Image (cartoon, rainbow, N blue to C red; front, side, top):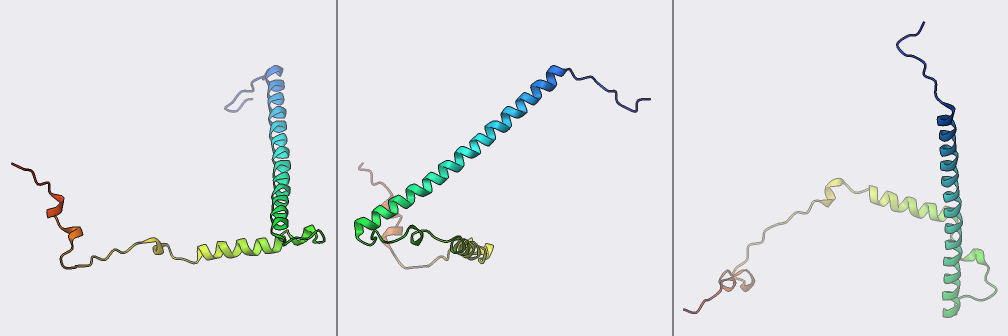
Length: 122
């Protein structure tokens, strides 16, 4: 006895094509993540090399200084990012509202309408 639906046979070709598409998709995503990982890893090395070169050129870095002294520990980076996040969240939403007060002044040539009109010779 079937309740409200019928079983439909799915051809094996559709199942195999679906499996191939899934495997290829997962492989592409995984390969892209691996490429991004190595790219970011190499970028950090390049930035450290540029920093060392700049410090050597300025005379602030000797050959005896270790590489660990140039890097920022993870705890320090986390503390800085948390402080920046909290400082941005402390302000009210109304702080972005500008209040423009009209100041009444006496005559100013900048606001004179007479200079804005064109005098045509007749």
